[in-house]
Image (cartoon, rainbow, N blue to C red; front, side, top):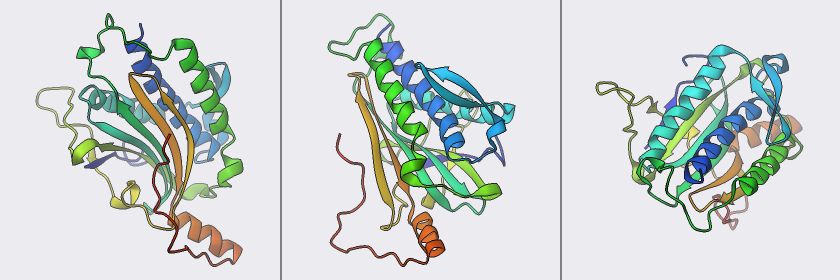
Length: 249
C-alpha cells in the first residue's frame, strides 16, 4: 500500500547514529529538493551548512512542520521494518506528478529499539557516512543541469509518499486511539503508477550494514511529454527498450 501525507498547501553510537543520520539526510534533502527545483521562492529558504557543504532550509513554520512531521511518521514505520521507499513528488496543482525523488530504504538488521549498546561488524563508520552524505548533497545541488528547469511557477506543490513492503498499510501511531498519520496516495504519484515514457536517473547508494539507502530521480511521462510539446518535438519510445526500474547498486 502507498500512503501520502497531504500536500503542505492543503494541510500539514553506531546503530543509532546510522539510523538517525539517514533520517537527517533525507529531511535535509527534502528541503534542498524544494529549493533546487524552485518549487517555492528562494527567499523562503535560509542557507545553512550540513556535512561541510552549503544546504538550504525552508523557514516557513508550516512547511518545516509538515516535513518534520512526515519524517517522524516515516521513522515510526521504519522501526517496524516496513518501509520500502520514501518519495518526494513534485506536482502541478491539479495533482499531476512531474518528478519523483525516490529514497529506497532497506533494513539490514532488526534491532530492538535500535539498541544503543549493540554493535554491527563491518558497519560503515560515522566518518565514511558523513563523506557519503556530503557527496550526495553536492550532486543534489547540481541536479538541475541534468533535469533541466521544472518550470511550474505558481502552479506547483509537493507531497511526501510512503511505500511499504508487501503492500502493507501504515500501523504506527502516536496514541492508542489515534490512526496512522497517512492517507491513501494517488496512483499516479507512486512508483508503480509511472508510465512507460518516464525516465529514471540513479544518483547514489550507500550500504551502511544497518540501513541501506539509494536515491534516484524519476521524470514522469507527463513532464517529458510537456517538455517535448513545448519544444515541438514528438517523443517516441522504442518498444524494445527495457522497462524502467531502479538500477542495481
